[in-house]
Length: 204
Image 1 (cartoon, rainbow, N blue to C red):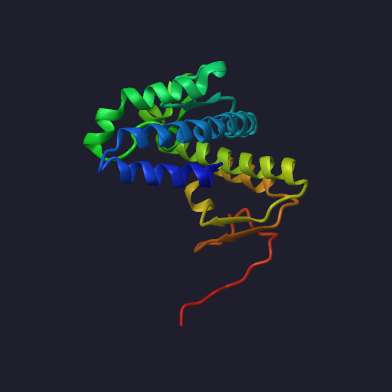
Image 2: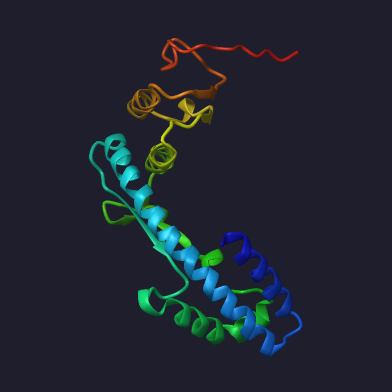
């Protein structure tokens, strides 16, 4: 669905530079058809990811609540999504002609994160932002394990240098029984990787 959507989107965007109203109707129908399928799949998976992420974020932040909201450019009406999508494409057509690209659809959607009902984008501290990223990464691991029935291999780049001791300890505990490769420039005595196998790479 995603590959087909991207192909149709590419062709529609080209057509916006040399308008053909009849052909646009065809692309609008196809874009709506595949776009709605993508939207429903995203909503399902985001709900799963959110449940895992909420658990990790609460533990990382001593009880704070994380909420993830999917921000769709198409109004969500479950029984009339394709029709609604096509109507919005028609409403936005003049704007699309001016901008020469499709301004609504899954490719323009976004995610909103809230901490204790406050917008993370506007109010989150650096530590809170890092906790969100870490919670999402751990949630991704849980999600993949649930659906693939096996633990994935995790790659992390210098992650401990960005975390305080509480968050670093939680991450270290979460990585138990998971094959993980971590790069770091500072594996000192306070490191949470003391019991790990280490490979030192020196610059020549």
